[in-house]
Length: 83
Image 1 (cartoon, rainbow, N blue to C red):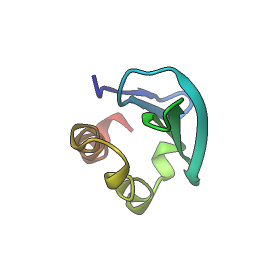
Image 2 (cartoon, one colour):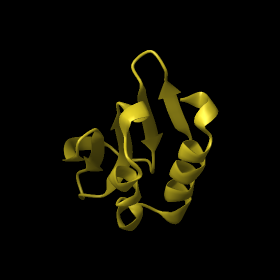
Image 3 (cartoon, rainbow, N blue to C red):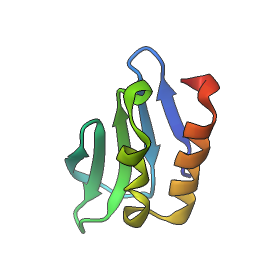
Image 4 (tube, one colour):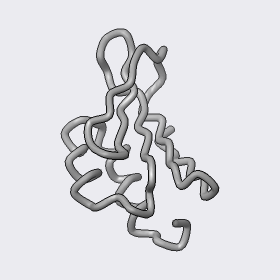
């Protein structure tokens, strides 16, 4: 799962972390939005303005998602050719 979809036209990225029914979203820092299910589990991550995000804005997510999802973020940001 944990595949990041990047849209260069809107400079946004979406990472589905786990299956679940979306209930609500929370912007935890500028441009970083977590989507929750009915059990308050993080099921997705949305990144707005990816090109202008600072590492601290996404690195702080480590404790809020599975290791595999966080590793995908690291790879995504390490590969600057897509952004």
